[in-house]
Amino acid sequence: MKRNAATLALVLLTAAGAKAQSLIINTSVGPNQIGQVKTTQGITTRVTFPDTVRDIICGDLYDPATGKGSFVVQRIDNDVFLKPVVAKGLSNLFVKTGEKGEHTYSFDLLVVPIEQAHRVVNVAGDAAVSSGVGPRPAGDTSEEAKKILASAQRQADETIRNAHTQADAVIAQANKQASEVYSKALQRTEGLDKQLADRAHEVVEQRFVRAMIQGVRELKSIESRVVAKKMSLTLDPRVLTFDDKSYLRYTIKNDGEKEVNFNGISLERRSGKEVVAIPSKVMQGRAENKLNPGDTIIGILVFDTKHFAAGDKLTLYVRGEDNAELARLNIQ
Picture (cartoon, rainbow, N blue to C red):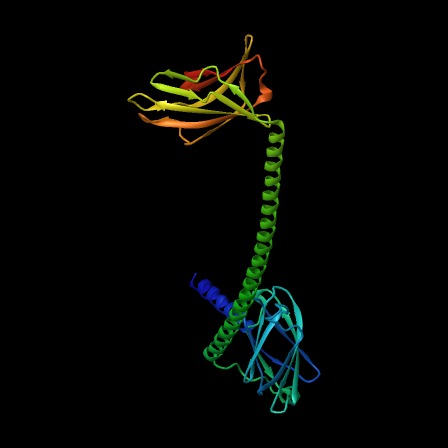
């Protein structure tokens, strides 16, 4: 049992070591060779060269101004840091090193799943390739980690600054467009209001002229005042009619010592046994149909003369709850 456990532990340690080695690789790239660097979105890959990096050329470099491109690339001393901004992609990379750029390295850049991506790629120079000398060993992992984190932080700060700049530009443009839309809408509204006002003035003027041509007619009320349930209802003795509209002024007064409420005022015509409500419009000096002791409400009842004939009986009703009759007066 102990031997099986020891064997299992050895297998796990071996697998873990192989996994760590696959993340950090050593490679030799000659002048006529193309190396391969596997990257993944969200991870920065460090490529280390034997000499100081002078120039970098990426086939699909990310442009923060336009948001186009697949790879963010940055160099520090002998290191080049790569970070893809897309989930899938393929590009190439040329790196010139040395004081005068005498060495050129070529690479294919791949965007792969995270478990296949390189974290560190150590590149050996031309001399190591021709002499058969192996690549230099990986440096101190803690220093490499610090460099990687510092580079990633710089890239993140740059990306955030660019994002803020683009967001401010978008907001400014949106505010400008909204202001222009509001200004145009306000101008259109003012134009429509003027048109409506002119049209209303024309209609009033036409009705007034028509009324003057037809003349003002009068209809004398049969009854002018009634007192019922501590409430008095008074009508003007004349009903004025012009432009086919009749106007009747009424007064309701609370003569009692308690509050009086009514639901509404209606006008009905009787022709033989037929009783029909006449459409009318009530305009009062107050909105509430409530009278305290001694209070008075004055209003105008407007109705169309086409809804009754000369022989019809017209009656004005003041009604309370459940349409109960509180007071009435005969007009015609």
